[in-house]
Image (cartoon, rainbow, N blue to C red; front, side, top):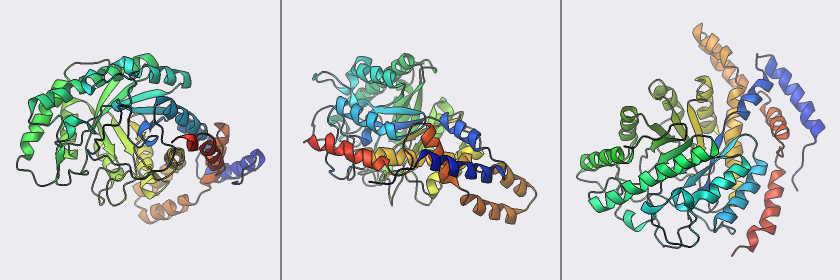
Length: 425
């Protein structure tokens, strides 16, 4: 059993922390209220290792690989929903749920991806209504017979390309229904793994095909209050190490010229690139960005997000640019080697901690010193601010949200594993 914090202890520590932050002009209550307003879209695919509900096709790939075989993987929608409902009892704040198209529920009927309909997601919509969750959506371009060549929307085979265009159109319609039914805009994020394992001879040709295919798929204008389209780039993936059609430059150009959202995934850039720096460079030109918070380790391996330097830097740049209304925050990691609820809770709480940490930064003092040319003072203050008593504020926030502070939530996950997960074969 991990030690639980008493309400008295949390309140006492919070009062002291509040005073210390106040000395630097920071209102901790205001920071907490701001955090309550920032939704985090939590991904469904952590709960079942990106398997989906289309049946055991045996087809994998497309840059997607969840490693490990920890017992208790959700095998259907009911199990996945139950797992997530349990996980969010340990996660404070406003939450959304992010679905992939392969999580359709057809009642046992075989439905190909170019035939999916809103009705195949009606149980998800009803469930989201009950829990007051917004939904986000993603077409699924991997783990399918028509994706084995490595090319989908950028395929030179017209029949293959047309199939995936129809899939994209269907997904946009589904996302629109989700947004309308739930009264909150559903972001429909498009990521495809198209690329080549070795050096291609016709990079330009595939990119021109992709541009045309996207234009066809996005041709119909949908209500922006119901759904918005986003496009997500990648540096490389499994079996596409030499070339990815949808690179950062391609989608940046496409987003700016077609007025769709640009999605930035923390794992989809070169390890020496700093995603946090890219945000302020793009905000003057992009009306809105979608951010996928992940943790690459040597490559885009989508490790569980931590409260680390990289995550704090991303949150800090959003706060400093006052861009919380322009950047939608979603998670994208999948680890099949550990308890999947532990992964969900750890990664989401780490993201929320980074957001709160950024909101508590006395940014005005840093900017004032910078504007006066006192860069030494700026550096010194940055270091001092790192050790302000952040944890008591986080614990107080969790308590006020009705969520267990500290590490004792781990015991609740353990109990759920014993009672529920271990009974799954």
